[in-house]
Image: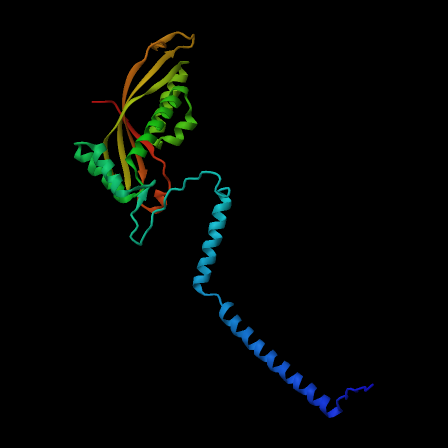
Length: 264
């Protein structure tokens, strides 16, 4: 039986083989390093567009988290753009629509139309219908607070001069020991009868027709004026003002009662 022996490589051949393997490995490592650096230089670079996309993504995540992942119905009013051709809006309506509302509300009264449009020019957020809704609420609050003698509430809704007048009437009533029993039934009509802007101050005058049940009682509780069982109609003409001269002033949406007058 013939046995074949494998010949072990000589020291020279081993060195040569080892040297060949080391060289190939070295070349492969260099090539791999060059490829990695190349990919990193391309894929690892953040551009301005990448930053913008990242910020948009973060904003969307924050919005989703705030909205309860979209399960709650959240209505966001559109924001008015200062440039870019987007139609300005007020409370979700276009300025053009607000102008149309003003013309419709003013009817044939050109002075009221002009005055409301002048306010809209200074304050693009002005909505005459929204204002009238707020004016009705303010009217009920003020009439009720005056009957109750609630000076604190009146002070927040009235100008200084009107507040002093109302507070003086309340003090006179209290000095006589009188008390007003009043129930506010409702407002049957509220119309804007005048509007203007002067030195950055917007003024809107509203004619209210309301129904009240009111009676004044003396110290003994006897009715000395009015009727606690009857509804009577009251007509008031009130003027509200608001500063719209600057963006800072317009950030305060509150109107104050600055004048009252009896119907002519």
